[in-house]
Length: 530
Ligand code: 3PG
Image (cartoon, rainbow, N blue to C red):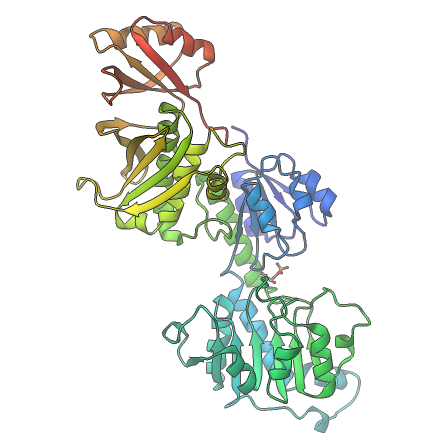
C-alpha cells in the first residue's frame, strides 16, 4: 500500500506538519488558485487548508481519490461543503483549538475600543499628549450582549462576567441552564435593544448572512458599540458605516469584513470611531500550534482508522465514542456487504437494529456504515459515510434504525436486515475485545466469521470430504487460505463455508471451484475498492 498523499495548501504549524509526515507523504503548496488546486489535488488522499485557499466545486474536479478535507481552523465558508459531500469527501474542522484565542481577541477589541487605545497610541507616537480626546467608557456594570454561545461565545461571555459586566446572551440552541454561570439568556431583540456592547460569535451560514442588517443595527440601543470577530458577511458593512456616521452607534471594533481585505478607500477605514484588525482572531502562537496539531491528528486518525472527529458533513459522534465505535462501523460495513453479495438482487430496504448503549450513541454512523456496505456494489459512486444516506434515498432504498434487546450474551450487537426481492435476510455482528469484528449469526444460524474481504463463499453438498476437496482445489490454484468458517443457513439443504483468503481471487479461480462436482455455488467477495 502506498503512503497516503497529503496536500497542505495553507500555512500550518510545524508540529502538525511533523505529525503528518510520519503518516504519509506531505506536499506543501500554498497560494493556489482554483485551477492550481484542481491540478494539485490529483492523486491526493487528504487536503488541509486554513481560510486563504478556496476549495470550490471547480477545484474539487481534480479530487480523484480525495477522502478528507481538513480546515485547520473554525470557519468553513471557504469550502464548498455540498460539492465535497456529493463526492463522498469528509470535511472536518478544529472547533476548539482557536476558540480561547479568538475569544480573547474579542475582549481585546472591547477594551481597546472602550479606551481608544489604538488611537491614543498613534497620537502619542505622532508627538501629541492629548488626554481629553481619549476619554473612554467604563465596562463595569455595562450590559454586554453576546450573540452565539458556541465555543468562542462562551469564552467571551465568561470573560465578560470576569470584567463585572452584566452579560446577556442569545443562542437559539442554548437554554438558560446550559449557559455559562452569570450569563442570562435572552431573545436577540432584547439583546440588541438593551446592550451597551454587542459581540458577535456565530458562524456564517445562510441563516446568519446579514443577521446584523440595517434593521437589526438600527434596533441596537443608541450609542451602543459593536465588536465583530466572527465572519465577514454576518454584518452589513455598508449599513454599519451609515449608523456609525450618523452616531446611532458610538463605535465598532472589527476583525472581519464582507470583503477581505476591505478596499483601501472603504469608508470603514476612514471612520475615527472604528477600530480594525486584519482577521487575526485565531492568530496567536498557541492557537496556531494547537490548530495545526489538532488538525494533523484528526487527519491521521481519519486516514489510518477511518474515524472522523469534528466532521461537518457526517453524523456527529463525540471523540470518546468515535474511537470505541470505529471497529463496529468496519464490521457492520463488511457484514452488510457480505449479506448483499450472498443474496443478490435489488435491495428495497435496510433495517439496522442496535443493542447496547455504545451503539445507541452512534446510531446514525452505524446505519450509514450498513448502508455503505449493502449498496457498495449497486451504487454508481463510491460510498462513504458522507454520501451513503443520500445515495440510498436516490436509489429508493428505505432505511430504518431501531434499538432492541436481541441476544443477552452480547453487550453491543448490530443486526442488519436486507429486504431483497420480497425476501428478508439478516446477519448480526459484534466486536470481540474492542478490535476484532465478527459476524455471529446469519439468517438465524450461529457463526464465528471474520467478515473482512477477500472472502470466498461456497455452498456445497453436506458430506464428509467435501471441504477437503475444495481446500485441495484452492491449493492447486495457488489460493492461500487464512481461515475457514462453517454455517448451515437456509440454503436448500446445502452446507456453506466461508473462506478467508489472503488475496482476491480471479474469475477463473472462482469458476474452477464452482466446477467441482461437490460445489453448488462459489462466490468471491473482493477487497473494497475504497
Ligand atoms: C477561523 O475560522 O478559524 C479563523 O477565522 C481563523 O482563520 P485563519 O485560519 O485564516 O487564521
